[in-house]
Image (cartoon, rainbow, N blue to C red):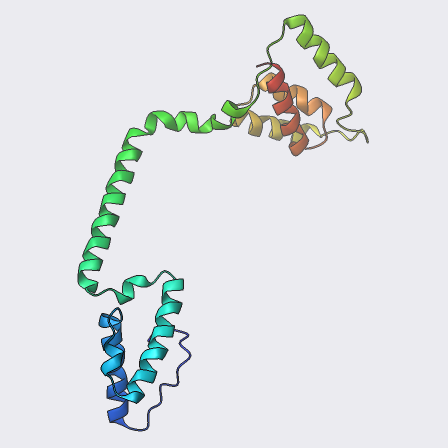
Length: 187
């Protein structure tokens, strides 16, 4: 019986327990047929209980427990799993060239703004003049700044962008945001 089954499994005699187990086994292999019509009345009540359990198992995606030939179903399932694993292995074999692109995947969704050098400098100047990155005026210590610079350069940001961002901000998170903003301006 599946776990969590709301059934009292204590029978009055060993014979009743054997009948219960036989009815359960019959239900598992022939629940798609109307065999319960031929069962004695006590076994019919067992059959309705087993039908309820079957509905609960179907809701949990355990339909495989009630197929007519469980061995054939298991063989087909194993064949499907092997085919999936083979396809996954082939896909991994073909993807090493794309592994580099995986790192840059997010940049393909970034909007591109093409503008001349003078326009770009004017926009950068306006952003620097009117946007307050650090209103309190807290700045990073030299140790923290060198640590943040090495971490962000390790993530393939340009050193110049990271150093400029670290000069304006108070912590690593803001430096990352400033570096991203700077990188967008230089695209």
